[in-house]
Image (cartoon, rainbow, N blue to C red):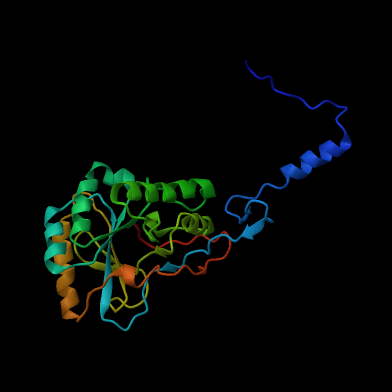
Length: 265
């Protein structure tokens, strides 16, 4: 039987009207802490997860830099061989709509030592989007990676390197413990550009390798050139996951502040 939409008669007792109004005002805002209780016990407030830190460089005395690859558009089989032969602990920040049916390629990369991390479902610019929309992008990719690989990434890279406070809150609610930007970009032609600081590689640098459309050099060729430069500077590739995201901690941006990197993937 179809229910009819009810109406509140004008003779509703004042006490009941006040009770309804009070109940309506008790809804907690999205992203806020919530109340939980055990059967028969008092309700206790549960604090929201702390915002993850935003990092583009690692402070370390080790002569290491970190190789991070974005999107998942390039599927160079020789790159898999390079990762295996050189034992490179690279981090792959994957976007579902870009990776698409190519997840098998990244399963092979993971099998030879690559780490798979989160780069959203559809690669939108996140600042200004509602919290729920940002959470859907980040948590949605967490679920995709969990379903395909049985993993739950701790690291997240926002598309274009852009984020705001809602991004950090959504990331925290999705289980992310660090938001990873970069100081150095390995361009499609193999040369390096820098967002700030010295115009040369230094220990702790996070290097972003964006996907390119028909780049002049393959992924394996660009990476091999970079490895040659690292050797000349007595640097090696470190495992980013050993240095970043182990423990959540507050991030520096103030409320509503949007930040970005000069170039991004």
